[in-house]
Image 1 (cartoon, rainbow, N blue to C red):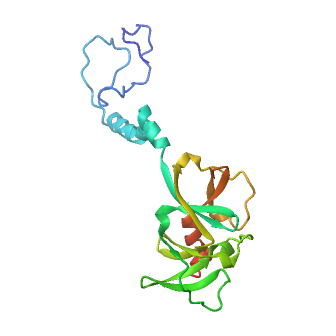
Image 2: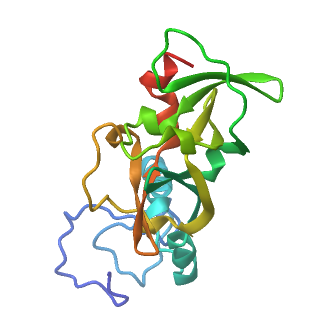
Image 3: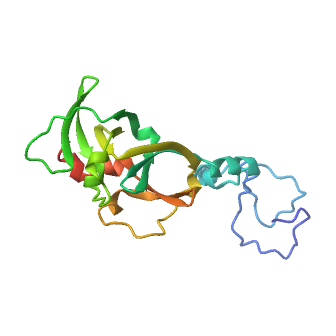
Amino acid sequence: MASKGKRKSSQSTDAIPTVNPVDDPGQVVQPGMDSDSPLMPVVNLDAFLAEISSRLVTAGSIALPEQQVSQLSQEQIQIIIFAMGTIRYAVEVEHIGEVVRLPEITPVPALPNWILGVTNLHGDIISVVDLPLFLGVSEHVTSQTTYMIVAQAGDQRIGLVVDDIDIIYTFPAEQVISPPFKIAPEIVPYLHGAIERRDEFIRFLDCERLLLGSQMQQFS
């Protein structure tokens, strides 16, 4: 920080002119001048524009008040937790249109076994995917499947059939962690992270990767 007193006469006059960001960015302080002497503002357009540009670029790094920092760190994520076999998974509620009892499904021949077919939902024909089969969940028992989550991402709207619906849960975003357990290769591309809840780790799936991935796209 520059001294408020007079500059020493021994200061080198070869120093680069400095721009004080607190003052008018158009006022260039010439080196070697006494700070108490009258100084006429010298408008240096290049310095002025550079200072404005600098302020715009660094605006995001300005320290925030403690209260605002606290609010940012408490960003909330709302998920719907569901079961596939003995394991619980979740996706963000913002990607869920509705949850319904398993509707009547019309099979479509010559498709992978994880595509159950199509269904008419409020006048719209959507594909229905057996999510446990798609993700290779070995504990899945088809006879227990009773719910369909209508998920949407981009222009995709697909019914995801799961074993059971648990709860809608809200938590701080900072609680999403890297899974501290082994993940099946089939799930890795669609996993956003893990959430610890009631001594259990919830597999947090990325709905956009799931619905917009090449595997589902080719059959949607």
